[in-house]
Image 1 (tube, rainbow, N blue to C red):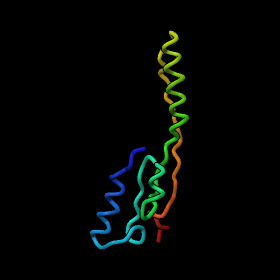
Image 2 (tube, one colour; image 1 turned 180 degrees about the horizontal axis):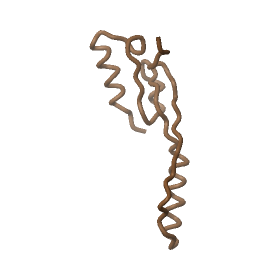
Image 3 (spheres, one colour; image 1 turned 180 degrees about the vertical axis):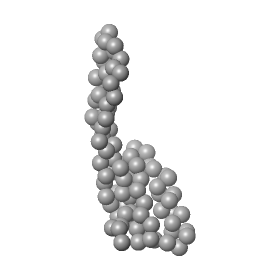
Image 4 (tube, rainbow, N blue to C red; image 1 turned 45 degrees about the vertical axis):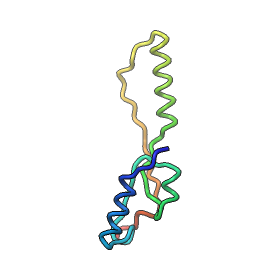
Length: 91
């Protein structure tokens, strides 16, 4: 798993500016990881459905290796918003 330093850097920059997360500024990261629940505050993130995406890629690759044609279809996967402590309710 990779740590998302951009969102964590944003938390640090907000604090350096004398503000608080989430009281003054809400921060949302992308590509959730187990570490984001351990940050202070825990980071709200958008989680991609990595396993279903990976399964589809493998299925398509196996089909191509078996002589099938590459699909021109567009595949859509729905992300999930994981709300944690780095966001506050709207005022």
